[in-house]
Structure formats: structure tokens, C-alpha cells
Amino acid sequence: MLRHCVAAAGIMLSLFPAAASAQGDPHHGSEGFRVEGLLGYDSASFDSVRNGEGLLYGVGVGYDLGSGRMRFGLEAEASDSTAKDCEQFAFAGTNSCSKMGRDLYVGVRVGGLISSNVLLYAKGGYTNIRESGRFTPTGGGADVITHPEFDGFRLGAGTEIAIGAKSYVKAEYRYSVYEESQSFDRHQGVIGFGFRF
Image (cartoon, rainbow, N blue to C red; front, side, top):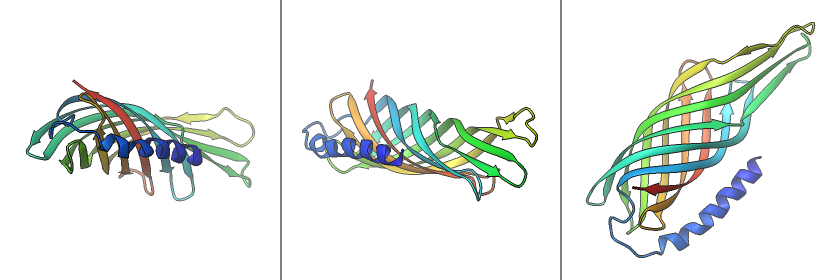
């Protein structure tokens, strides 16, 4: 799974130099309301023992304002993930699995134009996730299924490149940590394609 995600990211990133060479307005494609689709790699540490990797996919919206070369924005995102991991307890004959569920994020970002259509930015905000847990007890009893939710915060940084008057691509890394669960954090690398209105 990781190899596939890295390959997809590499293909998208290979397009960035060509996009960056495009000419345009100094404020080209970096202000106003935007909507985007996201795809990427998700590595989740469920606890000190279990770690899962998978595919992240979602959608985001935002609004950006400009002042000179600086950009200030609000954004929100809804995503899901295939990341999961299971732990077999041989001595007890039980099996415990955890899977990432939906993830909701709201936050802010601040960036600066380094060329006519290349924006570098940092971001941060609140995130809430829902985890799906499945515990198979000893003796073949019914599975116990839970859906706990956890609050946390996210920090990230990325590059956004305008490829037209109303469209852009981006690559972003972010780290999320959830205070209510020890050793529960996530590392994600995503690519995105969006439009501005």
C-alpha cells in the first residue's frame, strides 16, 4: 500500500515543475473560495503496539484572503482512511482490531507566494476522528464492536501550485495527535486537486 501511495505522489509531484513554469497574474489562483479532492498515505499509531497504514481520501473547502504576497485562510476537511491493524492474543484466544474511520478537521493556514503561482503554507487546527474497534472474545462469543471518537490537533505544511485561473494542485504533509489516547497519532502525506470560485 505504501509503495502505491508513494508512486501516486511521485507522479503528481513530477507535474509540479511544469505547472510552476506557467505565467500568470501575481495573485493568480491563490485567493477566494476553494473546493478540493484529496488522496494520500495514512500511517496511524493506535497505541504503543498497533500501527496501521492505508489510503486516505477526502474532500476539503476553504477561503483565502491576500495581503501583498501573504495569504491567510480558513479551511475544513472530511476524510476517511483504510488504515487498520489487528493484534492476536494467542494466550487468550482473542483478536482485537482497530480501523480509522471518518476524520473531521477545521483550521487555519498562513502562507506566502514565492512566485506568481507557487504558494508555500503552514496550517493548524482541530481534528476529530471516529475509530472502529472489533474485539473477538474467547470461546467464539459475539464480537464486541465500538466506535470511540477522539479530539486532537493537527499541524502541517505544503505547497500549492496554480495550474489555471481557477484550478490548482497541492502536496501536503500533516501530523495529528489525539490527547485522549496515549500513543495515538497519525502521519499523513496527501496530494490534492482543487478549483476556486
